Length: 328
Image (cartoon, rainbow, N blue to C red; front, side):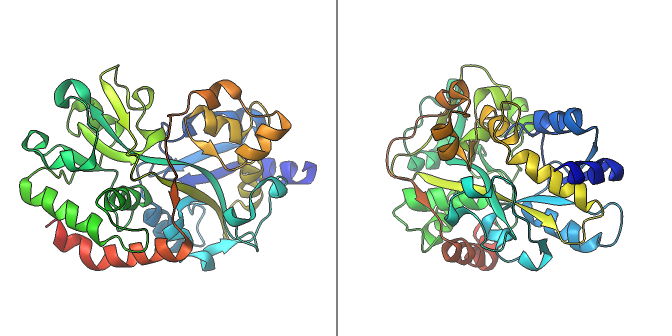
């Protein structure tokens, strides 16, 4: 670690991409990393998608602006491993085997459950996905991006799919539901962000629960978050290092920071942002988990569904072929 820290400080810069400050507490995570190591973090395209990250790695390869690290959805990670450098963080043994590539090409980092965040003062209480077809939701229902590019949006379509009786093996019923939403005029093509929610442009947002809490989106008590009991879709994002990173030492030090278990380490900082860190079980056992932050997580009742690598890839393939025509 001493050698890695020294090398990273000599590089002096870390390039990250597609990390909104309010996403899983990344604003504070970046500040803490800089405070700890004195390394400048250059954050590009904060509202970008997982696919945007991969595209930037390819288009900016060999330049000083290329992303050093990526935080991507699994559907994108699994088909992009040729871009990743293998690396095992010091906390490798605390990460469940199913949540890391055996060679260290990618490592899941934090996760949560897909949810519906909404303005209850305007719409009342939402208790089912099917309610979104009602006339009062005219032009109100939005996703966090295009599901053919953004993992959060893919998860939103899959959650709807499960609620409509579909299975994790086929996302078709979810796409069909959004086709209905579009036909009724209820689907909004606007990419939901904290700004669009605050402006009232996207009063109903299907997104990860940790991105939909009232504190994150800047809304008061009228903003509610609903996780359908018949469609509890869990999901984790993954870290990866660009194999041609312009700042390779800083990239690896960033990963060490993110997977550290201390009070000011990345795992607890993600937890403080409402996300469930990948080392949560190990940290619960060794007493390093922030218990207050853990107690504040949204309640989830029922058995969660986690997509396998094959299911995530199949969903992405189906969306690539069918999404555009479903919502045109």
